[in-house]
Structures are given as structure tokens and as C-alpha cells.
Image (cartoon, rainbow, N blue to C red):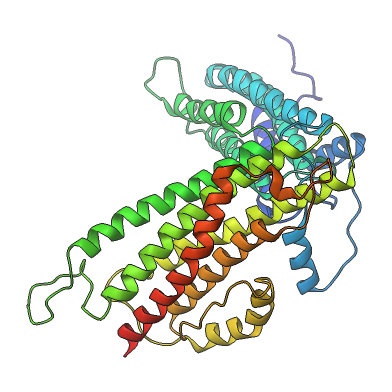
Length: 440
């Protein structure tokens, strides 16, 4: 009989230690802000310490940024420029490799962990320590993509955070099942908890390795296409409701899916704004491609490239307001419409309206649509649409050859800009008439 060396942890201790480490890593990833680059250090146990050291070893910043006012910080977050468009820099490629390596390591090790852990809890504890190593690789890769040096877009930061958290969450669930004993047992005893948890880990790892968009272009295009899809779904739904015609208020039957006669105009105006929003998002997709094609990404740090990348960044952020805006006023569009005023929201909008209007450069006048929540959301949407199209039309940037950026636009883009410049004032006029009819 041999005695197990005292330097070995018992299985419960090892699983508990890994569980604690994974929990802290999960909390760290949850706190990452998709709106900004991560430039701070990470405090915590060995897992997060190792991630910080690995990140620093790859020459990434580990210093806290200088504090500034909330307003300044918000402006900086909105103006953070992407570092590239199509060609992945070395740092980004390295980060993706870490994510892939971590996912593959966890995928393979989790299989052994589930098979061995059920019959040999001590060996299962050793494999739990190996699972933590894979988690550290994923944590490091995620932080690299959140660093300023990688120049990731907000879209990419969103998707990498979402995918990496899914892996760590599923891994937590797997280790917890063996730590609390719910997956323990004997071979062929019918307890499939471990197998089920392992399947979830595999699925999350495959999502990280195979479905995470590669680079800024892929991530930003995916978000744009999701917003377009959401627009299409909302348009289809509300077009069907409008086709039902106005409800008969004298009828005792419950017709909750129909607008009243006074609501029909504002509802139709709102749906037309949805259609205008979808077309504008499609325009942004095409413009980003045109501008991206004009970049010379072989010249790292080129000032002209930086300005063009800033244009892509700015257009995408306005597109975000448009895409999310459709959802924001869409949820208010179900009958019966709420016509009460929202004074707090109205005052907040009035305080920022002047700065929003100045971005339109005198090209378009967006009318006031009252103080109801729906009216304010539609007014926000019209401002975002106008700002986006005017930015595309009047940008003073130049291509790498010194020509106006508009020369790289396709005929399809120029035609869409012209049509939208004509359509947005019509949408404004329809909205004024709709609000007047509704709130009269």
C-alpha cells in the first residue's frame, strides 16, 4: 500500500479551487465594457494574475487611463477608432490563435474530465486544473482583443465577449457538477449529467472557434445585417397590422391588434421610418465596403488611413443608433398607443437637440414631434437617419490618392444617397401629420 503524496490536493479541493478561479474569470469577463478598450490591470487569483501577466508580456498596455469627466469619457468611448478593416494585424491574429487553442484544449480535456471524473475523482481533479489552463488562454485572448493595440471594433468586442463568456460559463457548470457530486456515480448507472454538461462545453467551444467573426469587417457587417433583419421583421409585422385597417371602437369585440382611426397615420409614418432605416443601414453596409476598399492597409499608422477608419467607425455608430432605434420605437407601436407625455425624456432631448442639429450642417430640418415617448423616439430616429446620410454625402476626407472620398462610392451608393436625401424630409412631414392626428 502506498500513501498519496501530501503535495497532492484531494479531488474536492482541486475542483473547488478551479471552480473559484473560473468564477473570478467569469466575473472579470462580465465586467469588460464593450464600448471601450480595456486598459486597466486585473486583480484576483492566479488565473486572472496569469492573464494580466500574459497580456503584458505581449507588449500590451497595463496602465490605468487618466481619469476624466463622465461626459468626456462617453465622448471618447464613442470616438474610439478601429485599427484596421480587412487585414488582421499580427496582434489580432495572435489573439485569435489563443482563443482557438484554449477552445480546442478545453474541448479535448472536458471529454477526459467527464469520463475519468465519474470513476476516479482524484484524476478528475487533476484534469480540472488542466481545464483552467484552457480558460486562461481564452481569457488572455479576449483581453488582447479588448486592448487598444489590437484596434478591435465595438462589434468585435461584443462578439468575443459573448463567445468567451459562453465557454467559461459552460465550463463552470461542468466543474460544479463534479464538485457538488451531481455528476458522480458508477459506469452505466444512467447518470448522464456529466455528458450533458460536456456537450454544452463542446457547443460553446465550437461557437468560439467556428462562429466568432474574424476581424472588424466581419463583426461590423454581421451587426449591420442583424439590424437589417430586425427592421424587416418589424416592417412585416406592422404592415400586417396596418392592412387590417382601423378598429371599430363601437364594437365590443377585443381588437387589440388593430390601430384606432386616429392612430393609423402615426403608425403608418412610423413603419415608413422603419423602411427608411432599413435602406439607410443597407447604404452604410455599401459605404463601409467602398471606403474599406480605398484603404491602403499596408501602411500601418498612415494618417489618411486613420481618418478613413474613423469615418467607418462613426458611420457604424450612427447605424447602431438607427438599428437599435427601430427596436426602441417598435416596442411602443403596439396598439393602443400611449399618448401621455414624458416630461423628463423631453427635457433631456431638448438639452442635447442643438448639438444633434448642428451635425446636420443646415442640410435638413427635423421637426419637433411633441413630448410623447413615441414622438420623441421617432424624432431621435429621423435625426440619426439625416446625420448618417449627410455624413456620407458631405464627408471632406480623401482617398489615398488625394481624391474626394465620394469618388470611391459606387453608382449604387450615390443613387441611394440621393433617394434618401429626398425621402427623409417626406418622412418628417408624414410624422408631423401623424402626431397631429393622433394627439389632437
